[in-house]
Image (tube, rainbow, N blue to C red; front, side, top):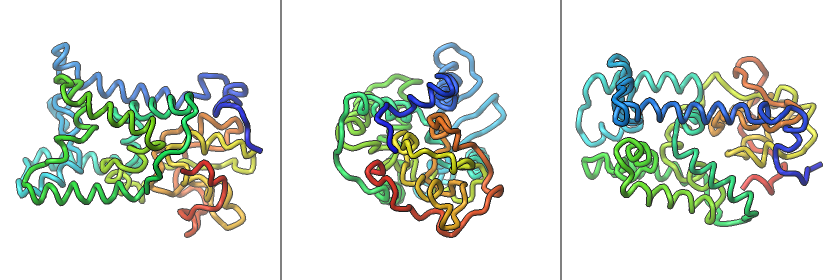
Length: 302
């Protein structure tokens, strides 16, 4: 039975507002804290972190480098410094453990922009829009790598909304406002969750890291599901839910194995029945069918 209430209303009634939004709040704290660490230097002279999301140095000790940017750099036939390679390995290992798409939901500042667009889209009741393939992001990812190899420059990073917003907040927005506004309007008026879910090559790259991630979300209490569909409505990648939630009779385990999962925790927040929890992939039986979507509630999987 599908509820006519706004997604999360039942969870707020049963768990209270804070618990029904706890992972969302933690994500915002994470995103804003990371931004604060970067801007503290240029704005207040407190240099805990130097650099930006592409490459940084924390406490003058720990180098961190975006592996996607490093690959683009290598394709330009320029050999980076060893600290950049070390930083990329640190980041790579971290996201292999916690989930590549966790970058999208817990670190990326553009996520706050696209979430705001999605929130406003729902409040305004905007339906439909352009139908974009989720594989488009992989084609764009490939093109950014080809572009780096052909031009000898990390050309994509000049217009990458993630890089532009982060640099803009530190050094001044300039043209970045235009790019970020375009992303907001795209998600608001053109297509639901268009940028993060269908087009962003950064998300596509980090998605590739999520196939072996031990940290997962699991529908451990899926027998308690009352088909309210709130998790489908709130999930940025709703196509990953049906197989796990409704696949028990097909031998599919409760752990969401799809690398598309952003580990944002919103399904945990939004569920009044506490069906979902953070878990490890090894704790529950899985099946080779795990990543195959089942025909269930397809109307919300666009």
